[in-house]
Every structure is written in C-alpha cells, then in structure tokens.
Amino acid sequence: MNKPTDTRFIICNIVSGNYRGAFGVTAGNDGNCELRTQMELDRETVERYLLNVTVTAGTQTDYALVSITVLDVNDNVPRFVYDSDLGLTTYFGAVSSVANAFTKVLTVKAEDADLGNSSLVNYALDPLSAHSKYFSISPFGEISTKQSMSTILSRNRLQFFEFRVSACDSPISGQQLCSKADVVVNVIGSTNRFKMIIYGLNPQQLKKHEKDLVKSIRQFTGSCNLLTIEKMIEHTAIENQIRTDIYWYAVNPTTKKICKKQDIRKLFETSNVQLIAGKVQPWFRLERISEDAGEEGNMSNGGILSTNWKTSNILLIILAVTVALGAIIGICAICVFWNRYKTAQRNASNFSHSYPQKLGPIYHPTMGMDPRTEYDYETQNVNMLISDEDLTMKSGSIGVPAHQRMGGGGPQFGGPGFGGPGGPQMNGGGGGGGGNQSYRTYGYRPAQSTAYEGDFSIEESMYAINPSGRLDPVTKRIQAIVIPTPDYHQRTHPNQHKSIL
Image (cartoon, rainbow, N blue to C red):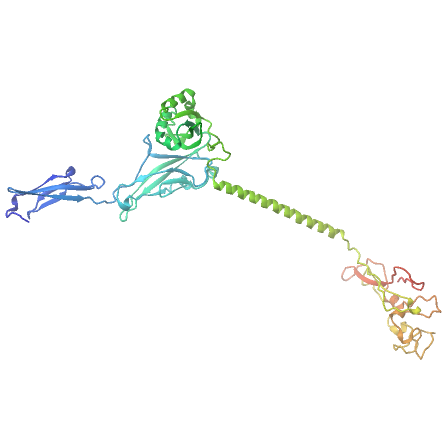
C-alpha cells in the first residue's frame, strides 16, 4: 500500500516459523514479497505453519504473520499394528479344537495417517489364500471361524492355517491404497495347553501383569518363545482369596507351529516353578504350573458342564431327542398296523370258500290244513362242477307241453283231463283240485293211491347228471350249475318224503 517509488531496494525475509526451510520469500518486480515452497510438504509431518515475514525499504521496516495450513491428500497406505514384543510382523492366533462356528480367533488392526474417508480402513481376507475360506473378518478386523473346528478338521488334516488379510482405505476420489499382512492360526488341543494357578488377583487385574508373566516364563520355553494366554477363569473365593486359572499355549515363530507340552517340559520342573513364583511374588502368589489342563481346559467351578457350552449344542441335543422319540413312536405304529394286517390276512386265509354256501329250505306260510296240502316239496341249491356237454335235456320230455305233463288235456283249469288219465271228471275238468291247482298241490294224487310219491317228471326231465370234472372243449373251463333237490330238517308228517334226483 505504501510502496516506495523506487522498488529496487525492497528486501523480504522470513524471520521465524519456517520449519526446515519449507518456504522462501523474494521481492517481486512490483515491489511485493512473493512466498514459495522450497520442498514437498507433508501434512502428516507438519500440518500448519505460522511464518513471520518482514519487508525493508531503506530505513523503513514492516512485518506480517502468515499462517499456512497443509491440506491432506490420500498419500498414505494403511499400516498394520503388531502387538508383539518379539518384533514379529505376522499375526499369530489359535483356536480350540472343539470350538463352535463363529468363534473369535484374533483381531488385526491397521491405521491410516490420512484424514477423512481416507483414514477409514476396510478389512478383507485375501481370496487367493487357500485357508481363508474357513474364516471370516468383520469391519473391525475380528477374525472368526465359519464352521466348527471339528467339521473343518474332519475334512483337512492341517497342523495350522495360514492366510493373508488386506486393509484398504476409503478415499472419496483418487486411487484406493491397500496393504496386506500374514495371519497364522494354530489349533489348540489337550497336548498343547498348560495351566497356571494364581491366588490374589482376578482376570482384570492380571491383564496389567501379562507382560511380566510372559517374560518370567519365556526363559524356560526355549524356541517356543511366543507365549499367549488363551483364557482366564475366575473361581469362587476360598478363605477370602481369589483364585484365577490361566490357560497358556506356546508357538514356535520360526516353524509357525504350536508347541506340545513335551517341547517345554523344562517349564514344569519344580525348581523352575519356584523361580517364576519368586519373580511374581510382589503382585500375586503362584500356586503351581500344571501340565494337566483338562481335556479341553474348559471346566470351571467344578461344574458338570463346560464354560464354553453353547446354546447350539443344547438345541442339537433337544433336536436329536425329538427325532429319536418320533422314530420310536413311528416304529411302534408300524408294528401295530403290521400286526393288524397279518391278523386280517390269517383270518382271510382260514375262512374257506371251497364250496358255495348252502341255501336253507323254503317254507310257504300260506299252506292250508287240507290233507292234500300236507305233501310239501321244496328245492335246495346244490353246486356241482359239470361241463356244457354233460348238461343235456332228456329227449322224453322235450316238446311235451307242461299241461300234459301235469295230467290235463288243456291249459284251462276247467278243461278235460286235468286230473290225469283215468281220474274222475268234474264238470268236464280234471280231478285233484280242479281250478284251484297251485304250487302246494302240484304233483298231488288222490288219497286212495298211497304209494304215489308225486309227479317229478318235470324235475327228472330237466337235467341229466353226468360225471363231473369234464372240461369245456371250447372255453377249457369247468362250469358250475345249480341243481334243485328237496331237503327237510325233519319229517313232521308221514306223508312228507325226500326225493333224490
């Protein structure tokens, strides 16, 4: 604003705030001070600069404070954070051999120095890793099993699982930056786990002394120097003392395999246990270090059920019991119905129908008290097997009218000869009942002929019985025919007779 006429003698300087000489200032042709960067700026190193710039023209001097803020760009990749005092750049985790599906194994963590969305990290399992299909990862970096370990181990005889995890930022624009880390997951069994019994502190308090415990134990484990606490179980206080069981496992970082208890047998020697107990004496009392940590180290409070007993196990047991009960009920029902079926089948086979059922005699309720009606005849169905050839009509009765066989001369009741040849003639009609002839007086003869048994010429002329068992020459089948024959249960009158055809 108050520039001198001659601007050739204007001098500009940065008096303070120029960290590492990041900026430079010079006088321009127009007499203004021009500020420029002299190096690449990094927001992650210095986010804000406050420069004191002075200008001198002859004997006059002035100054100005210049504030410079460095903007962020997505120039940093996410970096994994390894919580290992051994300086390892690999994540090591372990899971029990009886763990259920969706069991948490370990947590990975990555940080991005950028701002905004560029600092948000997304985790994913590398699909090119062969063992990544057995695990899943959450947006917070928690790695869990997809299936139960018993199912995974039944299909694969693997000593450990190895795969890679990627961490990528989330920029609004520009290229996405990613980094990867190796993950090794071992399977913990009863041959790997050992237990430390401590009095005086609960699990939350022991977390503060975890590194001290690891350093005390590591000198007796040799190459299996990666010691990790699997879990802590607090027991009911005994004599006002809190008891905590710590379950450990050891891994050899070089081979990436979990160690067995015989590999660290030196740790369980009495003298070494006493040395470790002396080192931790200021914080708590070490009772003992035991090789026997239980079948899976999951029993607590002396209970019957394990501490990691899951609801899914109970549901599976209930389902199995339900299926078993349903199967038993179904088998019983099948047995009952099968027994009924066999009984019905036996009854059907025992009920023989080799011969047709015999029809009983037919009695006429309109029979009067006339002595002439005391002769009563009836028929019964008799089934016999004869062929069509054997069923012939007698030639003597073919073509003879029915009224002639009955002894009459005409079809009218009053006609001559109804009473038969030689019978008494009544009004030009036949004897033996005249026009009242009916089924009951059929075949009737006057009482003076006591030897007369009735006229069965019709029945005798109907059939000729030949030996049975002949086959039909056309159909090749044996046919049955019903032949009438009289039958009485008992004779109630001396004039009642049986007639056999």
